Length: 431
Image (cartoon, rainbow, N blue to C red):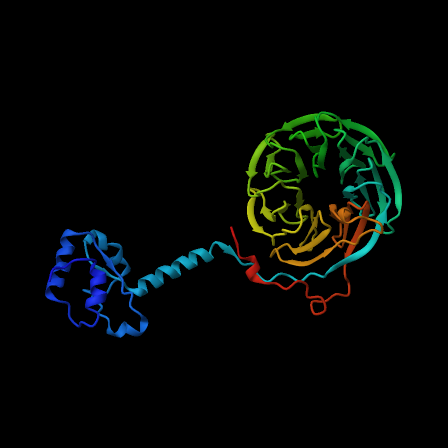
């Protein structure tokens, strides 16, 4: 009988019940070792017929023999144990690409403490003063208002900007407050006389963000003109114009150690700047959409950024990516704040407040903001936020023109308020 066709098919159909291999087929196999590349035959019979099948091996297959079979021109018979080991190794490699955090720390839930009204436009920015007695707010109504933190009473209204106020920063070392707005100006306010004493000119478009350096007499601003400018706060002289971003700057933060300046932009990038050299140190491109929020941890050497697709945690000084927080696909993140107790707050454009455990990334609480009487559904957005100096009170500025103060529930316990259940499967995110 002439040997034709695929050896595996021939074997399965005609020699299923054979106990010995016919001589002419054995000769074909022997010849194939010397004349043809190695052929891998797999036993595809059903499990219940496995005992009746003929399994041909010259020696027990090993991973090394299988790997070298093609070079040795040997006939390799399938060994299920090899496939099992390879599959297990593949699964282990895949599991290493996922992050599963430890069980998060319990945090008390937050609740509304006070609602403050007074602005006639969206509240775009908030800033706490160093002694934790009052805070300032800036609005689309072109004004800055100063409020008593304990009572919520208005102390003074400051006017000077002719367009919306976008950001405020209060110096820890000087009696100065700085503000910027869509009128392209940056102003320095003397808090002892409650008047503007200095202006900083140079930006070609609205100034969206600013911050005061904690140890140097330096002011840093970011603008819609895509530039970051560094100023001598005492003389209003420009020191550097930092370029690199391709679209408007959304946030600026300063810190005492390198990198001393962090900026975010609608161009989807984060830049860490070398202040001494006046140039970019690192560019982070992990976000897929424009970045609207930035917050530095008050005690750790780390920070967080927020965009419509997710919230990310980073570590200084290289800007190492640490983890993704649980994605928030229902709202665009407008603001982030972090307190000393490792609570990360996020405010969304649909009025959603989210609270996360900083270490694990677990969202332990989420709810909608309280609407002001007569406000529209479209006015539920949260634009700005800040914790007070103790981290025990959270202040938010919202689209309904209100300022809200939140605090942790002092009566809550892990038993009475367990929060959103922690499910490790929700954190299997590829890095």
